[in-house]
Image: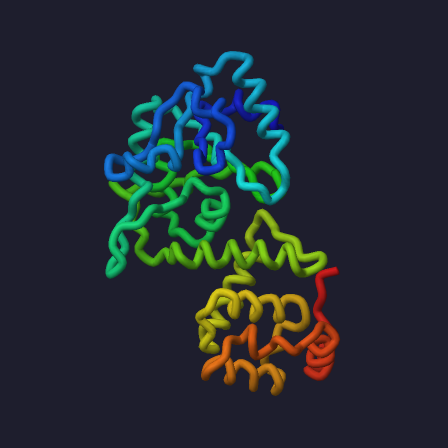
Length: 280
């Protein structure tokens, strides 16, 4: 599939924050940085016109796509199929980069980062997704394992004039993605999935952590990891319930659980009357 990617798309969306080689910046295209972020343009996305690439440039890009190691941030944020020209698409992508959030002001919306974009498929409303896609008919992006996925705008939905993040918790997307990365690294056999089934599960656990008074991100991550690795109701065990209460008073939950090892948590799971739940 990788060898066909450039032929199937009109534009490449480059995340310059992860583009280590100067070769990227010599490719034909234009910045999508809005006027308010001109000074930060070198760290923001750059739109490259694929039909303007020569054979040497295309070959170099394909080598880069194939060589990117797993979990490493990738310079290619997305490949875009569209009938729009360079200027129209750049203007659309630029308009989506800054969003206004009530009581919080204006924020950079990193929709172009695959680690954010993947969650928009289930966190954003159909209207929000249609608005983000705009003139784009196919948005192709790579996950943390280097697998490529192709997304399309929802059918029959009329885009709004501008992207409005109402109801979309942008901060949670970052917390969730960092938690997913931690779980992949620390829980044997934990696998992510393109359908976001695991992501939805982890997100629900983060909600449960908040409902138990945990607001520190490390505490929320630990809460989710315990439920996934040992037992979905592990926090109903009296000993962990006590530690949750302690964390809500003066200590962090990480600190309150610092003396617990794997064997102890496995015993708690058995005491709940259900088999230990592992990813192995």
